[in-house]
Each structure stands twice: as structure tokens, then as C-alpha cells.
Image 1 (cartoon, one colour):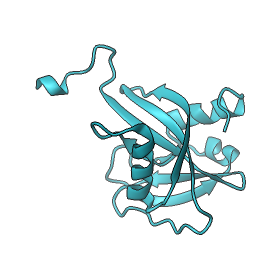
Image 2 (cartoon, rainbow, N blue to C red):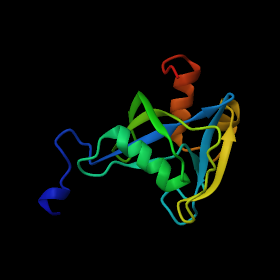
Image 3 (tube, rainbow, N blue to C red):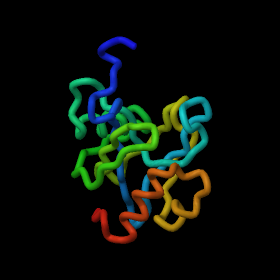
Length: 143
């Protein structure tokens, strides 16, 4: 392992962002492309934070890359760490009503607008997304 690949002493090797966009009580979600990690699973848009990149810039970039979505970053509303050690920052984003979403041909199989209940009932929902939605439901996270 190269020195720059070593995990920091606090155990977090990677950082990522998750975008939370809503319209009329529905959440923007994606079904991940079949050839990427967790392929075919449903989750909120998002991805890694590049070295030197701020969280708010990363969430805007990831939405643009995955969905051609012209979002504006709102606020970080939650933080979590995945089972594989990635620290996630969950950001609200605003999306213009007129925005036409275009799925990235490799990363996104399907764009979905689903209610909280529909997402929680989705058997392929990523575990971290389920935890986030349950935190929203119980009032631990305010959107």
C-alpha cells in the first residue's frame, strides 16, 4: 500500500456525498447501473468527494454527472459511515421544476420519484438510505 492510500487514523478511507431532492412529497432516487458497485440497487444520487473538493461542490458535481441535474446545494442534514468505511454527508439540494434529468448511461439504470413509504418498501434500497429515511420518519433528521 502506498503512503497516500493508507487509511487515516480515525478509520475513514473515503468520503462521499448523498443528494436529497424532493418534489411534491416524492424523493429523487436512482437505480444504479448494473456494472457499478451495488449495481441494480435503489439509492439517492451521490458519490465520492474528490481530493480538495468541498462537500457542497461534490454534491452539485455528482448530480450533474449522474443525472445532468442543475442542482443547488442546500444544507448538510445528516452524516453517516457505511459498513465499508465511507463517511457520507447527506445534503439537501434544490432542483428546478423545469429540469430535464438524463441518466448517465453507465452509472444510472433508472430515475425514480418515490415517496418515503415506497422507498422503504423497495427491497433493493441500499441499507444506508433506509437508515436515513427512518431517521427522517422519526424526526432525527429534518428536511
